[in-house]
Image (cartoon, rainbow, N blue to C red; front, side, top):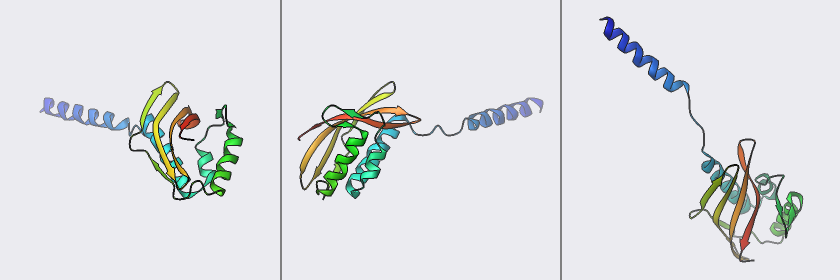
Length: 139
């Protein structure tokens, strides 16, 4: 009887310890895909502010500039209708993570203005991943 009680107690302790760790939360890949989905949704909705929310303060591209400039360019492009009938395909995206940086490729985007393929670069900041740059083919 004592052995049975001890065995039951051990099982209960093991179950409780296993449950004490709780859910792990999303993986880095899931967080990056979430940011890409937020970017896609914002582009399709024509919401420049939500696009900019996915971009790091450290964003820089030699042909574009920093975050403030890219925000203005995004708004201008949306105002000019470049995102009308927009679609962003994330089906083939492969994510490569190295430390606190990552790349996602290919991000396929199209609209009535044409189509592009992008490689998006991310940096992990404060528990999430934000866009720091990228290269776009097709412009």
